[in-house]
Length: 357
Figure 1 (cartoon, one colour):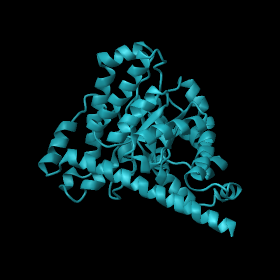
Figure 2 (cartoon, one colour):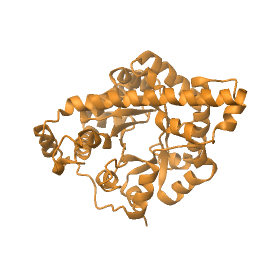
Figure 3 (cartoon, helix red, strand yellow):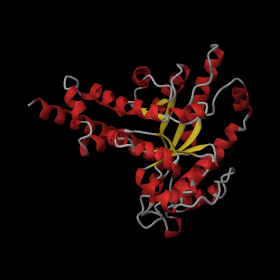
Figure 4 (cartoon, one colour):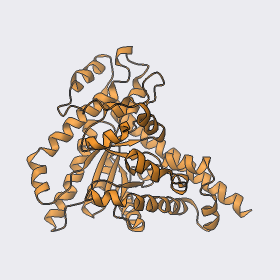
């Protein structure tokens, strides 16, 4: 039995951090589901930028829809893929009573500071997707928090993206809770699914050249441990227990950015460190295959955060302003997704121009 299946049996859901039409067409995604316990996937603008720029998987579809352009064409292409993926994972969704088996589609990153437009587009995309196991990804930025609350209240499943710190996670969880509580007050079904995606490895990349060698590749895991402790405390709180008794679903904690960026470190560093029941790990394809080959599941992340606070204090003593860095990472992440968004739209326009010549 490979380590990916061991993680799944521990109670951690494994989702692929990738999608291309090729993975669907050649049966690779189905094989990952069958052999490596993959039970969902996520997408983002960077993933689709590379898929459109580096492959010919979409050329025929672009030619068949060459009257469309820009965002409309992209969302049609992406939704075609994600509906197929959602159908592939539908047995996992049904077997888990809706806790697992999800795919995700992100709203346009250029809306990162526009709550009202995000609310409107999230509703439109969710309706157009027409799948019960498709999340709409909304960033956990100040404007995003309002959109998350309103979208949950409207009954739209939300994957909160671009969370980097425990405080950012807690703000996203609060937005989710408010949306659920408002549904209850309005006499609506409170069982609206959500996940909160904490990005891990980017912390270590950001401080690699700023801290002593003994602290390298420890910051992201410490932030994750602090956040996992807060997650467990929330699920044990009186407020959550009351909501759970009414039929509300827990907003599951998801580990994102779990590929190792430091070539001198283990290529399965984060998967081994982030093993924890009732969480999700979105795994880059290369990291998934490495973990299945030589990963080891040696136990679960400590529910009380373990040594997280001591480790974080050591980084602060080394001159790292953790709050400022968390905000910088979120801002940089939003900017990077916007850059990828503009790049993928340029690729689409370029391919359409060649087809129409």
